[in-house]
Image 1 (cartoon, helix red, strand yellow):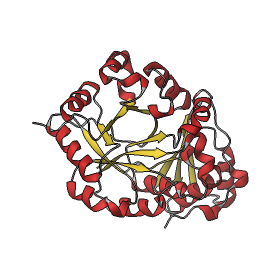
Image 2 (cartoon, chains in turn orange, brown):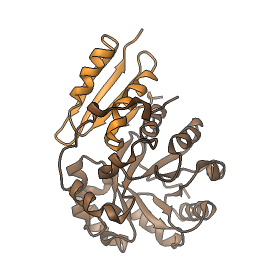
Image 3 (cartoon, one colour):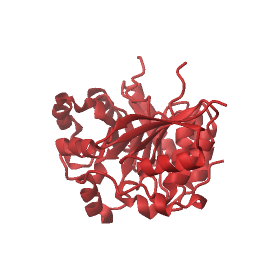
Image 4 (cartoon, helix red, strand yellow):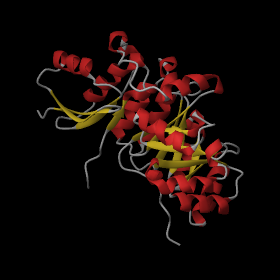
Length: 79
Length: 240
């Protein structure tokens, strides 16, 4: 059975809730798991925040880079 | 008769209801979706393009069939006609509007019995309809309205059951209305849907005609409004 694909589309979410939602979703992952973040712009500020708060604990892989949609697979590093 | 299943499932995809541009023709709706990177389209029976639904068939033939994820119809509509429409456009009927949950479940069942695909739409507090729709054993649709219900709590109830057959979501608001929905549980809902691996369409629907201009502008505009990282407030989101 294929692994469940977790898609977090933040385009629906109010601005003040976006980053908290992303980080809480990340926190809910088990090591080795991932979700795909979908956004309407390159989430660079988010990446910087991840690097500051979770250095060495996450993976960041662009699946799509615009012009309308950015998809990033964010994974929780295996223990 | 084999059960038709035109519910396009797999990866969750954000989409648009024709309610956001009720005067637009089918081509304009497809263009708006492409502009915004939206991967699903819901056609409401009452809107300009889709009355009757069969007139859309020509546009579908042009290659946009995969974009149509739902056909929103009134619960008092003719099951046989809707079954035919569902089959022709290869998309499920989302049975909404008038009637209570039981009526919508019955009509959906009738449409399926006639060879179409249908999803009864559930709205309002989940405690009022979750048991009945779960007992039906059939796929269903959920209308999430952050203005009127505790959507974060409802998401916890709905997604608690790993076997639930939630197949489609109508999300009231979002788009240009997103900033107005601060603190109403939207982040928690989307986070829970992601963690549950929801693989259906999430269709954005304007909450009111008063925002018609905002939606029209939003659909004609590329790019976003920024990520909001500078004003992030973690207290507004709670995922168990």
